[in-house]
Length: 178
Image 1 (cartoon, rainbow, N blue to C red):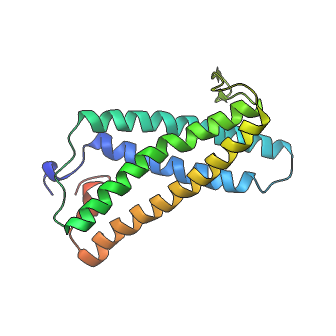
Image 2: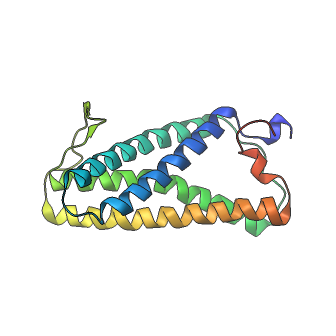
């Protein structure tokens, strides 16, 4: 596959770093909420918050890279599939920002500041407000499940192209040489 048909190495690295971070944060989020109050639960909440801020930073870098570096031309596919791919990608980008920002707002409204990696205190997005905290908790939860559904749709589409269409689409974003 020629370089013009592949994403740049930076785009590929950001894609896979963000993918791993999102899957990890989602898994930790599911697990930590099922635990009773304990030092382990508190530690996992901090890790989850750190992952969320890191995802937000990766998302900003990825969006900046995407806006300044043209992606390869769309692979040949029916118009409805191309449209579905574009809509899914747009929703993924929106969720990359919405999920961590809702989580940050939830943490702020709950009165629990975020200290990134235990070193960098981040400003509260809003003041402490229990009712607002519940709203942002719900928004964070549903946005996270929405992001998970979008990720599954994205993966299903990539696997369809790889194993059913056999059009090489997956190799555009796969690490290493094509």
